[in-house]
Image (cartoon, rainbow, N blue to C red; front, side, top):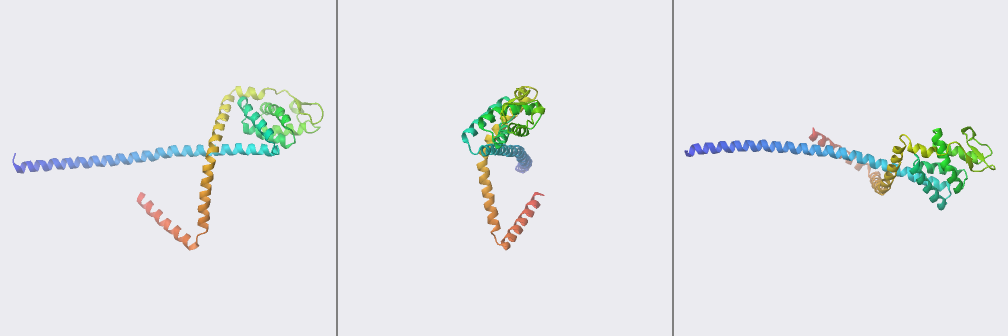
Length: 254
């Protein structure tokens, strides 16, 4: 093969190789963009549920903490009674459909009406039975019971519950015994119990997240304070500069 022909062939081969490399490079770039896009989509798909779960966990902890604070206040700071009643609420959660925070709210109602620890412990299961049988709110049922045992008027008589003994007695006899425990085993009762147990897990996670949230709030508060302390002219300059940068970024994206 002559030198001229060899040079032409080599040039053609190099040209073909270069063309293929360009195509390959373009494919790799396109693949890279697709992977990056998929990564962003996956990140958003994972981040959104995690953020929602974190928010729900903090809310669950907040509800539990408020229920405990309300009970402690109703008991006028009696720690012994508080520990005994919260333990009862936790144990009842295992065998009924009522979350311990719901039970503590009912206990708080009884305590606020002046009932002592032992009376509250005796009445709480009966209130759960009554609320279950009548489809009542647990706190409303507790309010009704508290008002009845604390006076000469038995507002519970229409529900088939009788108060035995002297005025103010907490010895109640009714036709709803065992209703709350039975409901926990029937229909979707086991699912509700599982939900309550999962709620306890979320409360623990929420408790762990609270310090992080407090730090975030403190940081944002510091930023707001610093911004408020800036000169008005400097604020305008910062906002204007930020607007310019944002418009350039949007232009690049399009």
